[in-house]
Image 1 (cartoon, rainbow, N blue to C red):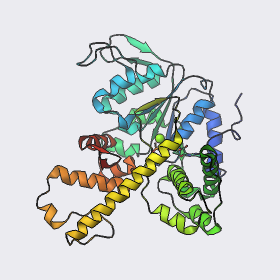
Image 2: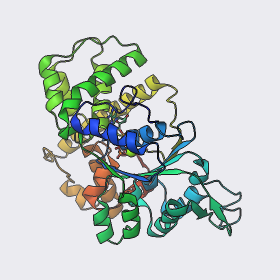
Image 3: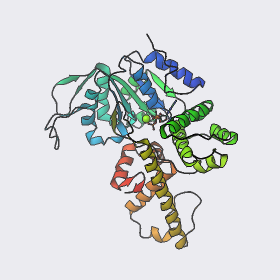
Image 4: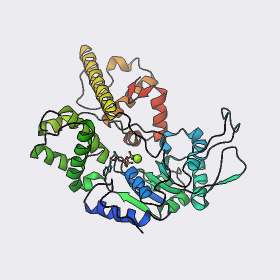
Length: 375
Ligand SMILES: Nc1ncnc2c1ncn2[C@@H]1O[C@H](COP(=O)(O)OP(=O)(O)OP(=O)(O)O)[C@@H](O)[C@H]1O
Ligand SMILES: [Mg+2]
C-alpha cells in the first residue's frame, strides 16, 4: 500500500506542479523502476530522489548519493564498482564500490551527464540486469539496487555531441520526473521562506521578528536563478544578519546583491550526513563572506591606486597587468570572477565557459582555488 506522503513530505509546496510531483512520487516509489530526474540546479532533484527512497520498501536500507561530476574520470569506475587489490598502481587493497555500498537500498547518481562514455556502458548493464564487474575483477557481481539518476544538462544535446549514449538515454527516459524552476511556481516561495525561517530560527535559538509586506512581496516575485537552494541560503543569511529586528525591503535588496555560495559538493554520501554544528558552519560561511568582501575592497583600492577605471560589471584585467600576465594567471582570474558572479554554482560556471563540470573541478584544484579563492 502506498503511504500518504503529503503531510510528512520534505518536498514542500502547494503549487500545481509540486502537487503533481507528489502524486508521481507516490506512484513510482513503491516500484523498483529506474527514474531520471531533471531540473535546474537547486530545484530539488535530491529532495525528490530522497522522497522516492523514503517512500519505497527500501526506506530503511542505504541511500547512497554519488555526484558523478565531482569524481575524476580516472577513478570513477573504481569508485562506482569497486576494485580488486593490485588491479592498478595504488590499488593496495580491494575496495567496495558505491553500488555495493548501496546494495538492498537506493543509489542516486547526480550529474549523470558527466559519466564518461565507457562507464555509461557498465552503468547500462547494471540498470538492465543488476550485474557489473569490479575494476580488475573477472567475476560478475550481482547487486540489488534501485537506481535514480539526475541531471540539469540537456541529455539530447550531449547525445548530439557524442558524449552521452543514446541507448542509455532511452533507458533512463522512460520515467522522467521534471522539476520546474522556482520562478515557474512562485506561489510556493512564501511557504518555502516561512519553512526555512522556522527551521533556521529554532535550530539556532533565534526569535523571528517578522518581515515587512514589501520585503515579502519582493521575495515572492524574485526570479531565484539558483532556485530553492538560493532561497534557502538567502533566508538563513538574512535572518542571521537581521536577527534583532524586522526584515525590511532594503535588507532584502542588500542581501540579494551579495554573492552566495553553494553547499560543497561531496563526491558521495551514505544516508546523508549530520551537520554536527550548524552554527559553526554558518559562522564559518559568514566569515568567508566577510573575507571575500575585504578581498574585493582591497582589489578595488589596488585598481584605483593604479588609476584604472573599475567597470560596473564584467571581467577586467588592467592594461599594465595584461602585459605581464601568464595564461594560467589569466585563467585563474577568470575562474575567480565567474565563481563570484555565479555564486559558486559549478553547473552555471561550466555552462558559461562551455567546459565540463569535471574540467572545472580539476582547474579549481589545479590553481588551489577553494570556494573560488586562493587557499
Ligand atoms: N520543494 C522543496 N521543499 C523543501 N526544500 C527544498 C525543496 N526543493 C529544494 N529544497 C531545498 O533546496 C536545496 C537544494 O535542493 P536539492 O539539493 O535537492 O537541489 P538539486 O536540484 O539537487 O540541485 P543541484 O542540481 O545543484 O544538485 C536543499 O537544501 C533542499 O533541501
Ligand atoms: Mg543535487
